[in-house]
Image (cartoon, rainbow, N blue to C red; front, top):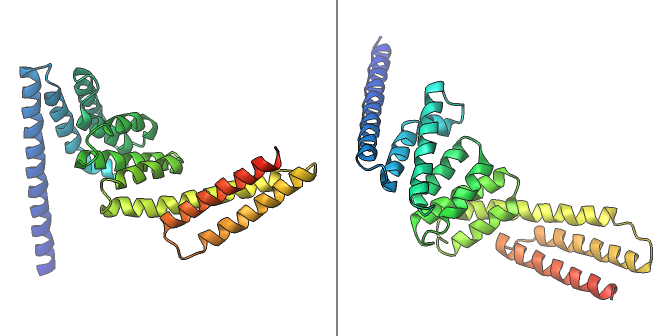
Length: 247
């Protein structure tokens, strides 16, 4: 009986907290709408409205289980507000770009998110906003199967945020995946590059040697960054030898 009573108390408490949160979000939306009405040409006012609307459905967006009809309408309003902020600022509102990209990312529309997040990389690279944009952009590229582009974004961001644990983890995972992809590409090229003459046979042998060298590097105890550098050097040496072979 005591357990049932405690559960009821907890459920009531949660309901009250959720109700309070919804009321707060509703108040923020109303205030933002008021600011837009007072100055329709204020990009920040439209951004604040878009943010308030997005925050009101953030939990549903993060759960990625689909939005209700009402939430879909709120998402569309949020999108429109962010776009208006960008239009009024001549596409220079960095935070509006980030949040619009984030909204698209949550909805699985990665292609639509990319240009807005790339635009946000024009923000000061040392800023937290730049870090957010780079982080979400890397995720979108990864979801699109563009791990090389994702890794490039992460490496650039780490120049200014090298101690960020999230970036470090992305760098570790992406480096491993890109190396594996390059290894597969090299193996595929070697397999289907049918030799028809002496030079082609030598090129095939060079490709096989490169594959073995890359496998050795991948299985070494070096850091992921060190492995990437060694693989790049091995590929450059391979290309140089092939060029010399066909001179």
